[in-house]
Picture (cartoon, helix red, strand yellow):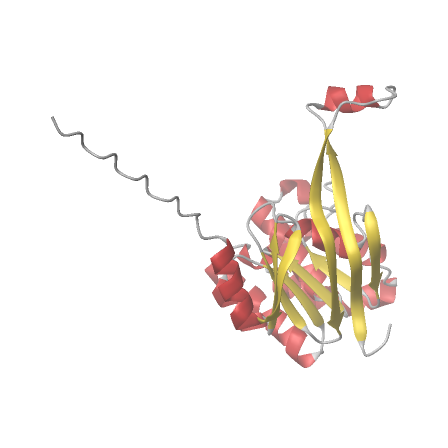
Length: 258
């Protein structure tokens, strides 16, 4: 890709097949004309993101934000259009998934690292920093099945934020843990994006968080991109898009004279 572009989407659409139940999904495998409805999650979306850009994605629940990020990370594939990505991606989407419950927290650091393509030596270099950042004490050497959801989220964030990504994708992950840990996460993301010139894609409903981390905003509505530009203008466009529609007042009926 040219001009330092690291992410490029061209006319990307994603359609999901919705079945009434898992039973109907299974039966559809054997039917010539399966019974389902289609949901267009993203609709003809195109944009480019350059290296080092910090971009916030806005939209109501169901607007297509998370689907778009999953397409960029390769977790899902577009029904139409093309996606090009250059660089190592670290996605803070679902922090508590991907752990082996029988492994200890420390063993899961190595498991996650190897899945992301790191060598054992590279993982060993960041192990102490991950353990210190997660700050879960002696539980780091206990099986993950004994962890609370908050502890899993702490460990998940600690691992992914120390992987040294070239593209960092965050989907509301900064809301994990208590207030002190959330501030710690925010400071870490700021450090990564500013010091290491990492490209940031950030899904949030918070205008304050978006302005703190991002200079550009993309607004989605019903799967379509309705705005792409400076963060302040993007926030205005998002807030305008979520305003409830004002119903016209009914005209009063004239009173009949007796």
